[in-house]
Image 1 (tube, helix red, strand yellow):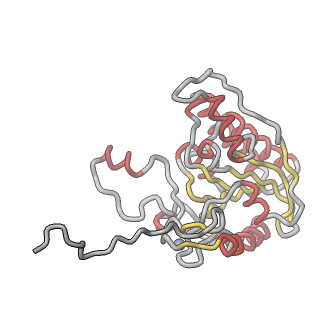
Image 2: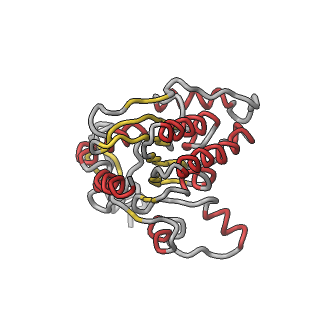
Image 3: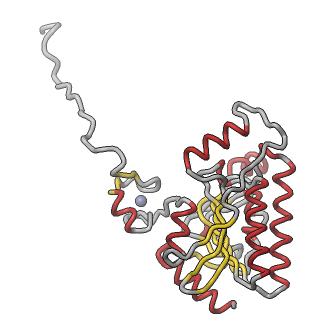
Length: 279
Ligand SMILES: [Zn+2]
């Protein structure tokens, strides 16, 4: 037997697939490779498994409001660095990096516009900007938007996409936004004006524990992660395995925390119907 014979197998060098960058997206749920144009046309929902991809604040507004009807408020409001926070990255550096990456000044976009010809005040948090966490500016913009709605007797719709709740870089200043936004909503409620909360993947912690959790109607997108503390920390604390689907929209609907789950393609019509009903 020859010691240095030819190997019985053939080495095949795989060429990297000849796909230009930026044309395809892999589904985070089912791993299907999707053509970006198809994904856009499908409102960024996977046609195979219905996974709802994250949307940016302006994408969300364009999807919900009537064309060219959105008027933005407090667009120039920017966060200060009240604690002069220094970590692996300073707060100022983190803000600058996320502003450059997203084109946003802050994690919330607020304003008013028409939804199916009905005037509403709208606020959206964007999870791409410091996880959509609620710093002073996010809290202030949302509070001003609600106060504007109360003054002009308009309904409020807030769409939350916040993987972070409080913004640790701002400490107590951030936590105070929870009560501030809820107080503004309480005045709004006293005037018998409707507030609809829409929860998208993810809505967690101080955002869920304040304005996102107290809508007259609470709607969620399918399979969105919604909760306060993340499941891993809860498991470590209570030393028990959590039930499957814990903190997902479907589980929370079954247990009464949310009122309905609405597919993104039906969200605008559902909101319009609810506004008719609640107004
Ligand atoms: Zn999929």
